[in-house]
Structures are given as structure tokens and as C-alpha cells.
Image (cartoon, rainbow over all chains, first blue to last red; front, side):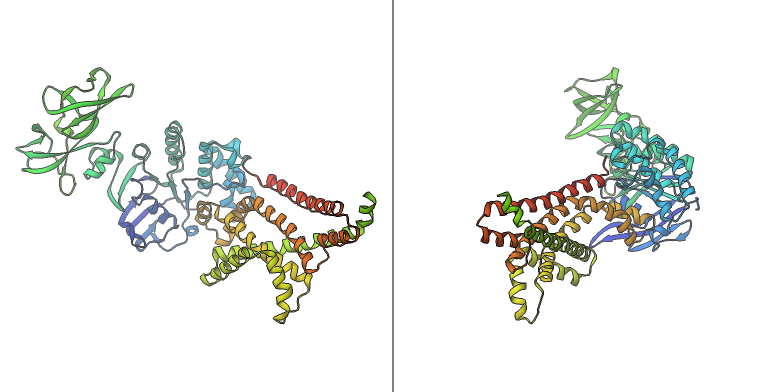
Length: 354
Length: 215
């Protein structure tokens, strides 16, 4: 079985009746890459994954694996393995039988199967659970069993559909790192669907951000975080997400609620209406700036999230424990010029900065 | 009283054998019909699905007794000479086959779609997915309702007495008319039916335990 696994989608369109789930998306995934498809529910990311698996057909466009057109190939002909959101373990089989099942169906000799099962189970740390049935496993163990069943075939492409969504918060964080380690050790091209941007940021080499059946940005987690392509991506990425507010550019400054503040990239853009984007961690309380009122304080232990109102708009800012204002207090907000993200008010597209 | 029962045992035994034969034959046939029609409903073409749907509505909407009378009295008018035993088995099987159809169809539909897709993803054919993955899980879901329907078949066979088949109920009625001891005889008949149905329900429980793969 090959293990290079480059993936190309070329102008893929998928319609369900009158609804267009994918509106001509194109993607280029490199061999061995951990690639995340990130977006809210209904944005088309799972449909894309299912198209890669061969579980859904396309209306237009092409799917290429290792530069071979597999657009109309059956799932079994693609040499891909998929881990479903529900894990889809066979409840009437033991863990060992579940892992062995794909190999058994391929007619692999029994001795080879046994070795492969032991190896796959050891890789995901369930070597001692092989005689149990899925109903006797915890959520985390079921997930590992599903992973083992997928990797046992040594596929060229590994597809994961929100594999952590059924786990509790702590286990999710632990499993994220585990998944990354497993993918690195296997070197298999992995496409990972999630709606949790923190998850995507921590595991992926690159991310494709989906919105309403379109890919709005592709880049490394750092690129997507530091330079969101448009206001929609900006509002989606980050915890808490970026604050967006209407502003005006004039004389190299950005004017918000009567306050004029310098912003990186404001020079040379002339006078225009913009959307100003500011990350919660980039806002600070100053002696002058944007007038605001502190509505609510969320104490996170190591830091606090202050919810403030600017005019009639709510914004969030992340502050250190030693600089916490009082609820109801009137304050001024400021930010470093380089921290300002400017987006065109009409199109939402990012404006070029210095 | 004991003497009466002992004297009646040969006849009651013969009736019991007939009831067991009718029940077994009707269960086998209704199971086959139920499976076939369930598969038609799930995977058949539009025309086939419509035909099965009509059959289901008729069978579930008309009492078994009326169906037996139709077979016994109306069939000869249509030039169909049907031996009552065969006719009884066919009618009971056709009637309960409709209920079995729903039992099997619901069981297959209860298996999550992801189970099909997991099979597809490794290149299995629809037939292989059905036999190796789906049917195994559907069996467990269908089990309790299937056993209940089988018990219904056993109790349903008691109606064939009305069309002159010498089953347990028919024999019981004959003995009562001769001995005028309804409590003793029908009490015994009821006990035999109870034991058959109880044995079936115990078998069902055993199979349920065997098929229970949750823990």
C-alpha cells in the first residue's frame, strides 16, 4: 500500500437538490501533511471529507489522489481510511475483530492480521482491551479503537470527521496531542474536520477555513490567526474571537466613536469606511482612547475577560489579574497600531497593511 | 377430574401435535415472508414497494378470523380448492408475515448509517455490508419483537379450529361437548398454550442474552 498521499480538489461543486453544499472549492494538500478543514456547522467541511472518501459524488470538478483522478472511483478503490464522528465501531465484534475487519475483508492471511492488529492496538495504547466489545469501552477507548481500525490498513490518506467531539474537555485536549504524535509517527496525509478552531490551530500544519460552501482562507494556523483574510474569518478564529466594529479611516488614523487612534496600514488607504478588528488580548485600558463601559468581568484564574460596551456594541478584552477594572466603570480603550486589523466595510476583505 | 384429563390425554396430545406443527410451519413461512417483504420495502423498486405496502395494509387491517373465513368459504367459489391445513398455515403466515416485515424493517433501519458507510469505506459491496455488519446488529434489535410475534402466531393458530382443523382448541371443544367439564379441559388447553408460549419467551430471553454484545 502506498503512503505518499497528495490530495487535490479542483473546482468541486456539490449540490443537494436546489441547495449547493460546495460552491467550486479547490484544495491542494501535500503528502504527509496534517490538514484541517475548519468551519461552522453546514459550511461544507464534512461534505468535502465524504467526497474524499468516495461516500459522496461530485456534480462538477475533480478529485485527485497522488495525481490520479479518483472522482468516480469507489471508496474501496481509493486506499483511504476514515474515522467517523460516531466511530462506527461494530458492536457485535470485539476490539480485535473490529481492528482486523478491514484486513479480513481484503483477504489478508490470518497470521499477518494478528501481527497487524497487535501493532495498531499498541500504537494507540489499547493493547490490553482487545478482547472487549465496544459497549464495554469508554468514549476515549472507543475513539482509539476506531483509529486503530483505520491505521491497520496503512492507507495513503487518513480522514477524521470531528473525532474528538464526543469526548469531554480534558480528554479532548490530551487526545489532540496524541493524534498529532500518531500522525507524525505514521507520516500519513491526514485530513481532519472540526468546528473547534482551537483544535484546528493546535493539531494542523495548515487549515482551510470553510464558510457557506466556500473556502475563504488556507494557511498555517499562525497565518490564519495573525492575518485573517476577511472579517468573517477574523470573527471565527481566536478564543474569544476578534472584536469587530465599524470605523472610519481618515488622515492615517482610525476613528471609532469620536476617538482617533493610529493603526498599522491606515496610511495610503485614504478616507473610507472600514471594519476595525481587534483581538481581545490586544486591547488595553488607557488614559485616553475609545470610550467604553465595563459591563461584566469573567475571572479565568490566570487572567480575566472583561466585557465592555462601546456605544451599543459589546466587546471582549483579556486582561492580567493585576489590572482589573470594576464592573460599571467608565474606561478608555487603546491598542498598539500594529494590532489593528482593517477590513473593507462593504466586502469584508482584509485591507493591505504596511 | 384427574381421571377425566387422563382419559382425554390421547386426544389432547394429538391436538397439541397439530398445534405445534401449525405453529412451526406458520412461523417458518411468516419469517421467510417477513424477511423477503422487509428487503423489498428497504431495497426494492418503487412498484415492488407499493405492492408490499398494499399487502401490509390489508393484512394489518383485516382480522385474522376474517382472513381464515375468506380462505375457507370464499376460495372454493373462485375455483380454488385449498386443503384446510395448508390454507390455515398460509393465511396465518401471510397475516403474521406482515407484522414480521415491520419488525425486520425497523431493525435494519435502527442500524446507524455510519455502519454502512464504514463498510463502504473499506470497499465492501452492499451485500457484504448487509450480511457481515448490518444483519448481525439488526438481529439483536429484532429479537424481542420477533419472539413476541412468534408467540402471536402460536395463539393465532387456535382460530383454525373454526375452519375445522383438529388442533388443540378444536379437540378441547369436542371433549367439553362430550364431558361437560369446561373448566378442567379448557384449563388444561390454556396451560398447554401457556407452556408453548413460555418456552418460546424463555428461548427468546436466552437468544437475547447470547446476542447481547453491550457488556
